[in-house]
Amino acid sequence: MSISIKIAQYIEKASWIRKMFEEGARLRAERGADNIFDFSIGNPSTEPPAALREELLRLAREPVPGMHRYMSNAGYQETRQAVADHLSRKTPQRVAAGQVVMTCGAGGGLNVVLKTLLNPGEEVIILAPYFVEYLFYIDNHGGAARTVATRPDTFELDLDAIEAAIGANTRAIILNSPNNPTGVIYSADSLQALGELLTRKERELGRTLFVLSDEPYARLAYDGHQVPCIFSHVKNSVIITSHSKDLALPGERIGYLAVNPAMEEADQFIEGAVFCNRVLGFVNAPALMQRLVTRLQDQSVDIADYQKKRDLLYAHLRSCGFRTIKPQGGFYFFPESPLKDDVAFARLAQQHNILLVPGQGFGAPGHFRIAYCVETDLIHRSLPAWENLARDAGLL
Ligand SMILES: Cc1ncc(COP(=O)(O)O)c(C=O)c1O
Image 1: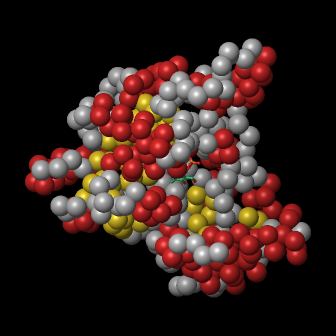
Image 2: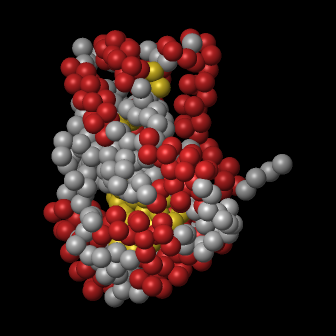
Image 3: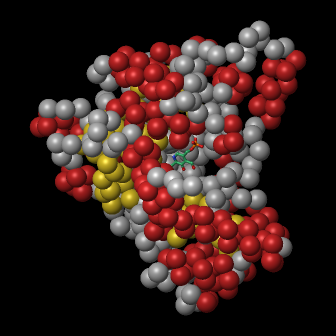
C-alpha cells in the first residue's frame, strides 16, 4: 500500500513524537513502569470533578428522550447558552448562544475555523514555540503556516516580528494562552497592543485579519493570574477551546468555538463554521458530553494541585541549575536544554529514566518540554533522577 507522499513526509517530520513514545514503551518494558518518569505527554493524570459523575448518573437515571439522535450541527441550544453565559461573565460584551458552536475538542474546533476562513494559499501566523499540530491543521485547509518567534527568554509576543510577517496574504494569527509549551499567559496590555496593530494593518491592507485564540488551558492559571479575554482586545477574534484539560476529558472530544459578538459578519462566520463542522465529518460534538458539560461551565479540576506540582518541580529544576521561566498557567515547563542539541539531551534524560520532548518538536530547538500533569508521587520519585541528569549534563 502506498499512502500520499505528503502524509508520508508529515509522519516523518513528526517522527520524534513516535520515537519518544516507542522509546518510552521499550523503557517501561525493560525497566518496569514504576521506574520510568514520563513527562512527555500532556494527558492529565487527574480525574474529572465529582460533579461530572453526578451528572452522568443523573442522565443515566433520567434519560432525555431522543438524547442519542442527530441534532443541529452547532450543538444543543441549552449547552450553547451555558457556554455563552460563561463567556459573558469573562468579558464586558454579552455573548449569545448563536455565537457558539460546540466542537469535537479544540483540535476539531481549530480545523472547523481554519476551513471556514482559509482561501487557498492564505497565510496563518503561528508563534514559536508552537503546538506542532497547527502546521498540519493549517495544511489540511490549503493554508500556509508562517512562523514568527516569540521573544527570547520570556516567550512574550514580539509585536515587531508579527508586524513584519503580516502581508497581503495573511488571513489569521493563532494565539495560545496559557501556552503549550511555555506556560506564558499573554497580558491584557500585550493583547491590546496586538489588537491595535491588527486594526492598523487591516486598514493598510484593506482586509480582515483574524485572531484565533486557542485556549484549552484557560482555567489553569496560577498565583492569581487571570487569562484576559481576547474579545476585550481584538474585534475579529474567535475563541477555540475544550474541556480536555479543565475538566480532564481529553478522550471525550468536547469543546467549542465562540465568535466575538463585535466581529464584522459574525453571523456569516457562524453559518460557515456550522457547515464545516458537518462536512469535516464531525457532524456535531458528542451528544452525551454536551449534556454533561452544560451544568459544569464554572467547574474545573483542582487547580491548586497543579500549582503545587509546578512549584515542587520548579524549585527542584532551579536548584539543579536548569534555566526556565516559571509558568503562569497550563501544565508544562519549557527550559533551556543544557546541551546544544536538544534531541541529544532528551536521549541523555532517557538514560536517567526521564522522558521529555525536545524543543525542536515545537519549532524551538535548544529547549525541552516537561509535561507535569502527572501524579505528584511520580514527581517526588523523579527528583533524584533530575539531579543526576543535571550533573551528567554539566549543570552541577
Ligand atoms: C495548544 C493546544 N491546542 C489544542 C490542543 C487540542 O486539544 P483538544 O484535546 O481539545 O483537541 C492541545 C492539546 O494538547 C493543545 O495543547
